[in-house]
Image 1 (spheres, rainbow, N blue to C red):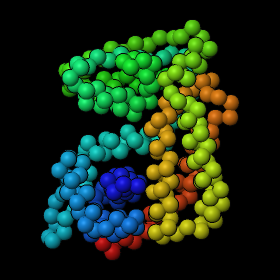
Image 2: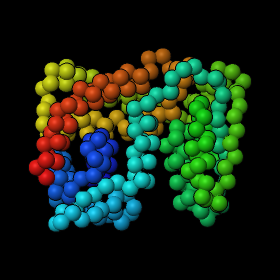
Image 3: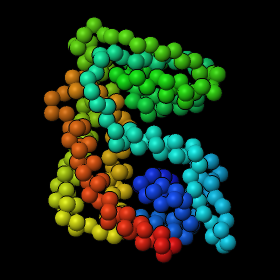
Length: 266
């Protein structure tokens, strides 16, 4: 878990419900739980402020940090991808984005591709990305201020279920995704009895819960959340999501209690 990600996760899962800000001393105490030294915390906080992810103010001799609006927006988007799943039947419509970016704008093209993947789109070809969910407005909004990016959006049906299955297999590495979900289940499902029994407390509960979020979110950010008819029999994504939600909920109280303790001392 990288220090920058830890700062975002601490704000997203804990500090946002405790005023949305943190004193530097308290942040140092929280990061120490993950063996991040104070000097590193200070450097990371300064860099995040310079890059526009954090704002700071002085309260006497104390420095207080708060996330910027851009950071809160990023956290909200990420939380939705991790915790939410599309419900209801699929209308069998594919939502497509066809893009054009000038050749010299390679970094912009790469950022566009990362954003498309973030929203759950997969590449049918290098410049044609699609999703079974209507998120084209989000893509258009994300690049509305980039005149070099041309985006055309379409909605259409395929020739039928066989074609849909072929499209899904070409646009996403579903086999690898399923393997990663299965691996996560092997790690965390056996731990549920200990979580239910309340064995983990204090720092151990906080670190375990943060590790859980870190390990799990690496997968749903690559998961297009496909309709059930496009998934293989025995797909591990659903069970993994249920285990994640239960574990995350079971560890909440002891982890939050320890955060409160550290903030009070800091």
